[in-house]
Image (tube, rainbow over all chains, first blue to last red; front, side):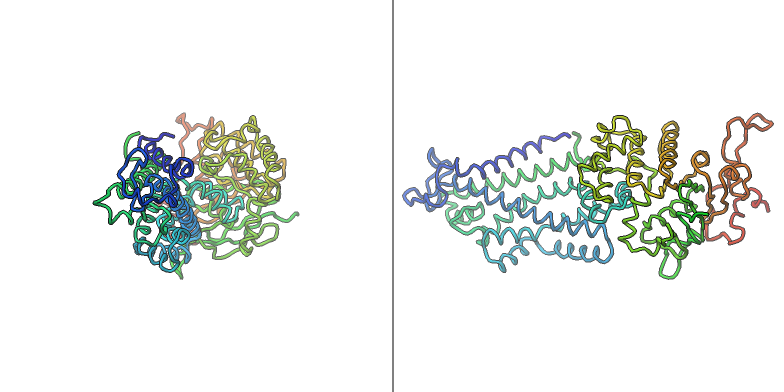
Length: 273
Length: 303
């Protein structure tokens, strides 16, 4: 399998974010919450505070490293939930067809018609702010595309010789779905999940920016942006670095997803390898 | 006389066009297969051979519906069997091999594992035990180096080998009936001969009955003891293989045999002339019950 430049760039950026998140407790020079020192507030970047300090005098670099943990957790967990819902609904709908298919299709269309951020906001409003409800809200919003892809892949795989052979060999429906169909459609699902991580990170930032996500004083890239809003003219670095972190990680996930798609699905290839 | 293993009685099925009308595909066919017997079904494309086999497997999909008749397997009517029971029979007592060995195996798992799954599924064996049995099964279908080949993925095997793997899977649970739906059409002639010999010998050794579906009379002749000729959803002639070839009784059978090139047969011009059966299959809706071959047969086409 060949991967293009985009894939490696995306993989590099994603690895950087993962390393930042995992190694944060060891490589961060300060504590993200407790090392607040009003004497050091709003310092521009220098040798001690690489990315400067915020209004409470906390090191922006440290908080960005810890923020990576939140973003990664949100990206991965919400996509795992999304994929599980999407695969279960899409695969069963495509395989069994009939009224169940109609129902799932209708539900998918309804979900696609509601703007996902608004839906997430509604879920958050019910569950209250915080990380667990954020994960649930984002996990429940973006499964519709995965569901569509799972359904269409199932429909085309269903007519494959080996699926029909499995039926004649006496395999049950669930066994066929999990041993014959699911492994063969993992490619596109994986691509969707990777691309979805990028949008989940963005949604998390947006929800935290609106004050519904991660609650202060714990650092998340979105809530750091909220705090930086009033300071943007006085201390632009407080806004620039979290913004850059969001930008680069989302770019990383998207490039990774695109690269995966290019190499997993030769029919979708846009450029010559 | 022993009881037949498979007894198809007046089987009728068709495509449901809408709620009330059914376009007929099988117009009441009946035949019997004795235990251990190899029965051949010949006929052109669209004559209803494959649909018959699907009906026996209980795998008819949505627009296809059975409108009458019975399929008795060991005295049990398969058409009335609950889904779960039917699934237990499939692969276990009745197995099937397909025309396309290229697509009939899951590309993402090793052939050893796919054979082993049969033992796990139908005989409740553990995976470790099943994998040993799978290697044994590969050896039985004469795959060279079975223990190494079991670790191969389907794309690493040739068409002939894959068809052997399919046979190994189908025969894994020692079924009573093997349905072979044109199992050698996608293979070239030398491999075809090997695979045919394999099916013949394995089934003879195990006493497995075979329902062999093909449009190739030569293949049928080399495998089957009895042959049924299908045309347009009807079983037009049925006889012992030898008798059918020596003395075809039905017009259509004669047409089929005439279209078959034979080694060494010559006419006075020094070359055998093959008789063709007129153009494509007739529109079923225009055929009458009594003379359904009329629009096509060489004699019937005369005014």
